[in-house]
Image (cartoon, rainbow, N blue to C red; front, side, top):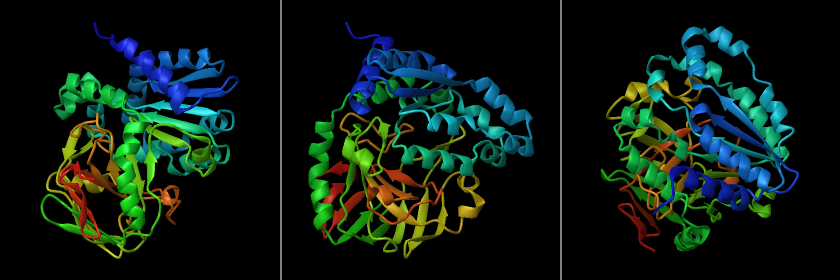
Length: 372
């Protein structure tokens, strides 16, 4: 007889707290959760206490969060500054966060200016600087996205989604390393890269001899000391930063992007000298443009790529980056991966499950399958 869902949560908690984050006796651990994932957070609370550490749970109430966005104006939302996060950042040793809220459908009628006002980018950057300085070990667990409400909104099979998300958490660092090693070696030695989309468009770039960084779900001392104190779970994503400014061509993403209970499909970008000169989508382009900060629209620059190496993750849900053979193209900070870009506050890009990736004429990933 298989484990119950709660038993699976308990096992995941033990693994994340013990192996991924290496929680030690006496450490202060903040667990940030939505109300729909309190049962999961409770298992993590217990796992932290078993290791002699001190947990605290911070709960965001979804209904009141929705109510605030509906009823309060932008000025009021901007005025309610959150200083608790700074206090937590100065006290915690470890931070564990869960994805949410449970129902994305309520965001359909919430203007983006309200959501931006509620999400204080400047304050969040200040908190992040504190956590980096103090070397706070952090993780974000995406499997709590798989709710009945979210599955209905996006037309997904809830059971398949939960099985995929929970299964991906059981893949091991050793499996990731075996898949990533030949890719890392080819990138280290290579000079020229080409990413060919399923529709035939191409993005070309120069490699810079930088080491590709594998997020294998375990934070080690050397990771934290070089400034990489964050793991995304499920893990199994390799990141690398080609030479800045060398990107040329067009990239088209075949995996849709989830946004406010709708799918943005066929996202594409034209790139010249690393700068995104034009972008669009086959479906819901207005939604795509609205989701980007107006100040960022003319300063988007491609800065790093990712390749999924998790053999137990499946593409087609909301969190695709770690699924084996999925390739991501991203704008934003790349200093954690050996690059020179930081402090951009930019988040733009997309993922492809059927792209082909070549280095110096050798195919490393062919139509979504790792071939080396």
